Image (cartoon, rainbow, N blue to C red):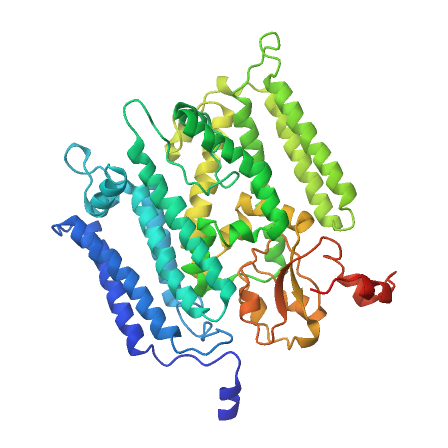
Length: 548
């Protein structure tokens, strides 16, 4: 029995955390306690001092805990008894953490007054939000909002848990580099630079808040009237950001996805992915690997993508008129052009990629195309700006200044997808559903990049089936719910639209079976022919195959 315990690949449940970890927990909880006191309205005195102490204590606590957990760890797999811990195995602590995170998101999104937003004299902040006022004045010259508080805590989480993640995978250069990347992009592009840009505003010039790495369709409001007006009113620099955003969608992103797969964004740049990889890492094994979850994932994420395309098209069409005697490029002309573009693109993909499209994927694509075209036809007959929204709709706290069916659906998208799904469920449910539930089920950016990756990218994960011992570490740690082991057992390349290229499956493999590669498109999806010998001259195949 003792020999079996010592040779176990999965490790044993930890008896207790060590002294260093206990010190880290104590320091980190002290920092959180300061935030709780501020939320409860306790007057702490100097907000700048106590905010500094709180954020420093939280960051230091996480780093000290990580040092105690991983400083003396040997290279190799990192199971660390995750299925034995209450916090990471849907135990009592896990459920409590999920409830606490979900509750925070609900209050942040819908009841910011509880946090002290504008609750003081003359609309001044109190409570937790007032605690962040000094930092907000330092960066952008104005009082904090609930979103500034959220952005600060979000960035602190990625930085602190990013250090923890790097310590955990200290012997894997790829994991360290991509973690440094998400830490940099979140801190600089999503937090510091946009806040500093606000200091450039004056009575005659207004530069919009702009997360430089956030792009459509993840940025679902990118082409809303108010957003476009902001960029136009910001003159040359605003037009630069607007044009850059369009180029990113149609040129930069497709090229990078072709070269490196969706990992260039989802695992190296995206803030949602950054939080999932760092703070959400202890819960990555909770992502369901069931076939039913995979089927639900495909329908949900593509439905959100279709909805995003339809809503964006509807919003852009409202910029155009109906009278063909006044405008040559009318609303109907735009909708017709968009429909023709989608049909032509679908026809080209269906023809040139027909060998890579399974029947169910092809049927799903046809259904999505029909729904999209049907929505375009409906738009051509409806004058959205003349349709008023029922007052009951706005009782949900949605955009009461937007009229018309397109505005109603756009507000619903922002409320249901942008707030509830990506925020409350996507992050609050880390301890219950895994760290990538939003990326798997609802992110339209992951959806569109996944289609490009599956059909047009050089990226794949190659496998050496002869070395696989079927330990299952790769599948267990796949946050996207991919049964990696089934591919490795067959020596089959992993080419999945959902794969974000995080590389953890390779990092936890004890035999070096998995390797992330970028190669030619030829031979990328070829395993079945080789395994079964169907219509393949194996000698020709071997002679022509590139050695990577």
